[in-house]
Image 1 (cartoon, rainbow, N blue to C red):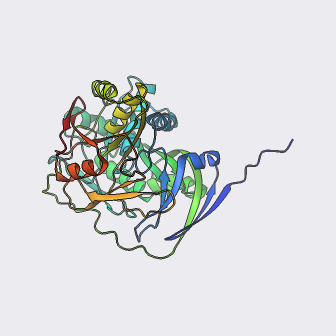
Image 2: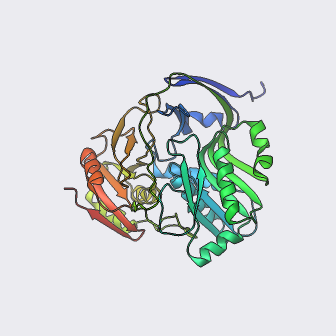
Image 3: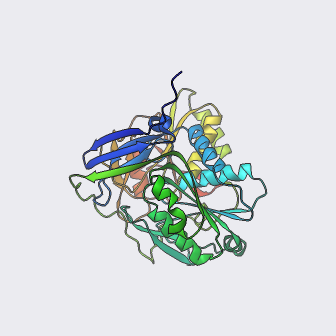
Amino acid sequence: MNAPDHRPLQRHIALPTGTLDLKIGRGADELEALLGFAARANARRGFLFMSKVLGKHWPCTPSEMLAVHARLAAGVPAVEGPVVFIAMAETAIGLGQGVFEAWLRAHPGQPALFLHTTRYRVGDGELIEFEEAHSHAPRQFLHAPTDAALRELLLAARTLVLVDDEASTGNTFVNLANACRRLNPGIERVHLATIVNFMGAAATAALDARFGLPVTCGALIEGEFSFTPGAVPPDAGTAQRYDHEAERGASPAFGRLGLTRALNAPKVLATRLKHEFARTDRVLVLGTGEFMHPALLLAASLQSLGMAVSVQSTTRSPILTWGAVSHALDFEDNYGEGIANYLYNVAPGQYDHVLLCHETAPNAALRALAKTLNARLFHFQSEDHVEEVPVR
């Protein structure tokens, strides 16, 4: 009998923006199921590892997403004391919140806090800024909880779990960990939970020194990459207009200021909608920007009732129509920054029903997108108060 072949899987991908070379070790057998490749309209980074199980740029079934959340939660080492989970905006907010909730289910009674980073100010509490250098919108913010009990939990934590869809250099994780340690110098260890880790074995082994703390990593796919830039894509325009004084309608209720429990799923709404749809109807539940996880919970509730449901979200990231992106829509953002937002791999008429979920107040941008997709609008004023908004 031949011995199993443990050599890394090698891939050479020619993008419109350059060439991407990969060596995949652990998880190579899942590469096609979990990951696609796309070209970014971004001179700082011309490629994108596009997750197929993130519910962001690619339509995904809720059960697939929940299974990934459970797998990443299971990779968090056993620790004592409070654990802080932080999800990276905007792409990994839903992933991080799902990992946090899966971890809570597996560790009932153990204290934990969830926060997600954001590109919006909420309230006038303490705000920590850090940089995601390769992003189209490099300024990220972390809000310190304003609730006294949540703040105490953050300051008592000894373990920090940082969640993102991919790790490629580790720079953003280091920047975020340093921001957290300015709030809580007592953090003793860091765990990185990602769908893919392409930092490579040497860089991963060097993380303890870079963080100045013990670091563990849990990823479904591991390997390394190199990218040779080619033609610089045309400037996609401004992707962030941060105004300290601007009220963008971003809610404090869904994770920016901290949560210690899982969000309630909108089961009553799902049951009502199920009775309005035919069993064979194709349904898309669509989140908006940073508002992702409640859309997944609605989609999962519909799937549990027997509906054929996909879930994903709009984004501020400009991506070229190539590779894993077969279709792109652009439209005005619903947070009022005056920037372009995008929806990928969804064409008008592709689904029988589109349920557009949002945290911001109803506005012209939302109504215009709803008309383009023939969608219905659902305003989540809280997890338990969801109001359908007429599309005029």
